[in-house]
Image (cartoon, rainbow, N blue to C red; front, side, top):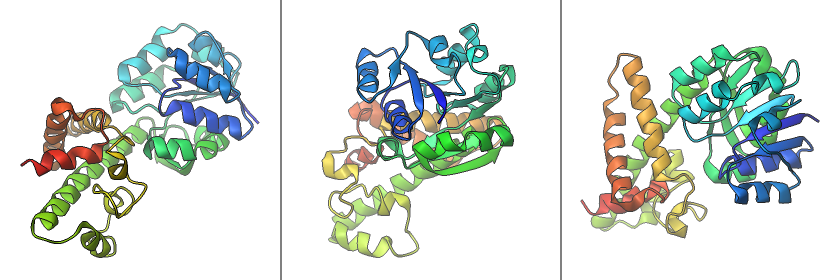
Length: 292
């Protein structure tokens, strides 16, 4: 079993760290939230006083932070953070951030670094079924397999530094566009007298089939585990989808292309969060779309 440092024990990082503990790893963790530290300690984790203390002697250092500026500050501004890890350690950043920052930070590190954003939301984090999209050196990816396998079910090496973030941006842009189209279809069927269950029974097995329908259906009933059955409590919050769509638009601009559907999805999620939906699950946008 490995000695792991973990920085960022919030809604995603907390259950991820707990799954590492369940797998028998020794985990030293840090977060700015006393409640997050208390939950981590209750699960058997060792609470430390800061990021460098979490990194000290670690064979793997995992970070799960809100945005690129936090990743940059953690790795570039905290003197000795990466150097405090054990020789041969692997750094794993599972934050969802912009590609440029991921590549900049990785290039500055004295240890091999993997950008490893995740898909699966809080349910995936709790259940240890996250999908990891990993960029960085293949040998570091191979070495980190026991860490990823304790937290996730699908672990894919996407290529060099930053490529995990590229794939995450593409994935969530596709998900947002698909969810919006799914919501519109269920609203249209409802208004024209077709029940949600009937539409689900057909589309979940026909050419429109998607994860947004079969696992995360945006109306109550057909998929009991979907947020629609608990008043759109996330799940994956709409504010986070808005953030990810912004990163996707930034990536598209860096690639010199226009992602028109992604831009429209971003505009709709911006309207949804501005109207009070930021803390709802992203599938809750169906309520805004119903209003016209």
